[in-house]
Length: 124
Image (cartoon, rainbow, N blue to C red):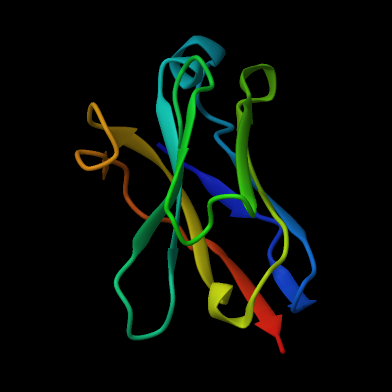
């Protein structure tokens, strides 16, 4: 499954960005049936799950971004979004989206191959 993340860039601390993840080759019904998540990976760090959204748009977040990031989806467009507010330099990373399997936060795992992601750089 091809997932295309976009919307990254350079922003000052305290600023905002909105990331998009598109699944152009999935049909609507298939995309709608997937739980989706946003991850990030900073240099020399493990990739971490930041936010998840269920098929019914229930959301869950890592503690590091809760209250600052918001995940949403538009099934009609086959897209998932990550609104990032109050950005900090430590949010700088490559951000990826993926399809999630699992029943709860601790069980979620990404099941699709990783794309290029989109780079987010937050300057202090």
